[in-house]
Every structure is written in structure tokens, then in C-alpha cells.
Length: 431
Image (cartoon, rainbow, N blue to C red; front, side):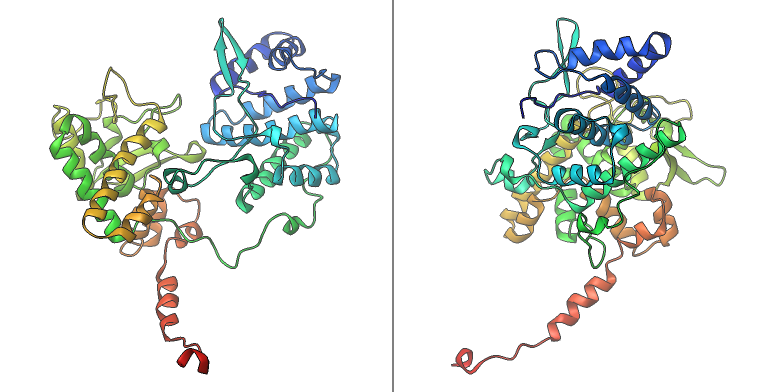
């Protein structure tokens, strides 16, 4: 292939601005300038159909501007589809048939090496006041586990794999895209729905994937480490202790602690209702707001955090202080990566402590854990002692079936009963 893929859609902020420009001016002119910028220096000749493809996709993505995570997921899959259509098939996305979608899925499972990167980079970079495509960007990224990386291994393009869940997501997103085109009377058919045997692409599982969580020993090590770090260096690690409490005690996602254009967590998001009970208000996946019941231990963690910040023990209804302020400078932490690094430092120290306590196996397993496991651990621990519906609502699950995945009583019973199984040994083994 002569033409390497180029990023087409910028961050949500720039896509919003781009869409508004198209609404005020000649959209084909705006898109023409943008595509020429994207493919600057490339041999690719922009086909006439590309302008319509881009415009329709831009409007579709803009409709998901209320949720950063959803926007990012849809942008990733549609960017892959458009690049494949233009650079490989020389065909409009409006002209795809069932066989084309099947061919695209097969390509995603085994993309050309030119389409695969070994690290995540920004799509566009600033250059002379202009947004220009990052030459290091690729539509597909090879990922390896945290433990494998710590062991000195590095990602290789040949190792790229697409999980069954990722393939399911492709089907779902492309299906939504073509349904949108039908509703807008841009096309008449949804080629994704015409695929009758998706099972040949998606591997079936006997049951839901086991929830990744910390063991009781690992969780205790993490909390003891966070408390110890906070006592040793309050200026640096009181933040670590509070974040760890929040991720576990309120089942928060990292994205729900970081400030975004649609929501900034503040102290007043902790509030008391008319019954005297305390709650925390947040906006999660799908731009959905929810209230989370605040436990006494979480309430104590909040008071300790506010005391460290030099504030009164309890927040008022007009307290707009950022919940997680920057360590240096003013304002809230906006980077999820920064929050992840804060907790990861605690994880790494907890691993060292476990090794020093002669618990090498627990330490080795903790090395593989991600920060998101704290949310999983909190839900898994609480669903044992709280009504499932209460945990469901606090966690922001769309259904009780999702919460049920955290109930591992049956798995424990199965594992325990396996101890009774015996294997007939041969005479040779007995000698």
C-alpha cells in the first residue's frame, strides 16, 4: 500500500469547533481544507466521495459530544473504517455491502503493519499555529500487560491482537453509524445487520469474564501503604490516600475524579439530604449523573482530606473547591494519566512491602493489577454484604446483570469442590 493512514478527526474540542464552522460556512470548503491538511505530503488523491463521507461522519460524532468516552470510542472505529474505505477499497462508506463489512472486520483482526503502532500518541500536534497530523499516529496499537512491560518486554507489531470484546464493539458502533445514516435518509441499508453469522468473528464464552480484582491481602497492603505514605509525606501522599479511598469506597472510575469540559468534581458534590444522609454526586459513562451513598469510612477519609487542605471538616453547598486539586498551581487535575500515576506509585510500593513480608506470590499478582481494579474490588466486596440493587445504583451499572458478574460465590464453590476430584494414577507413577 502506497498510502499510510492519517488521523482524520481531532479531539472533541476541535471537532465541536469544526462542526460549528461547517454549519456557518460552506461545509465542503471547510472539509476540503481540513482533508488537504490531513493528507499533506501524501500521494493520496482525495476522491469526490470523501467529502460527503467525512461530513456525515463528523455530524454523527458531534451528536455524541455529551460523552468524552463514547466520542473517543466511536471516533476510533469510524476513523479505521473510513481509512480502510478510502486507502484500500477506494470506496465510499455509503456504498459498503455486507461482504465489505466482513472484509473490514478481517482486516481489523490482522491489519497491515503500516497501520499498527507500538505506543499511543496524540492524533494532531501544533505546528506554527496549525493543527497537523502526527506522523507517528496509527489506527491500531499493540498493547502488552503492565507486568510484561515491567519485566522488560516491549510491544512488537507482530503481536497485535483484537479481542472478542473489541470486535463486538466494532459491530455495535458501525451498526449505530449506519442506523444514523438511514434515519437521516443518507443511505437505505445497514450492511452490518445483514451479517448473519457474527459468531465466525466473535469467540463465544461459556460464561462472563472473571472480574479482575485485588485479593484481601493485596487490598490491605495497598491501603496500609497509602496510609504509611500519607503519614511520611502528607504534602505528596494525602492525595494518594484520598484517591485510593474514593476509587474503592465509592466505586469511582478514574475519569470521574478528573475534571473535563462537561464535569468538574468539587467539594460540594458531597452533600447531605433531608434525612441527614451523605451522598456524592458524579457524572459517569454515557454522561449519566448518579448519586453514591457515602459510607462512614469514606466520610472519615473526606474529613481527613479536607483537614489536610486546611478546610473545615464538612463541605457546604456552595463549596466549589476542586475535589482533586493540582499539587502545583491552581485548579483541578484534568489528566486521568496523572491520577493513574499517583495510585500506581502506591501499588509499586505495596509490591515492595509484600515482598519484604515474604508474600512474593501476592506481590507478583499485584504487579499485574491496574488502578481500575480498585473499583472492581470495592464492588466485589460490597455486593457480598449490601443489596445488589444498592450496589448497582452506586456503581452506575445499567442493569443488575452487570452487578451479578461481581458475585463470585459460585466460582468459589466450584473451586472448592474441585479439591475432591481425583485422578487415577498409573502403576508407573506409583513406583
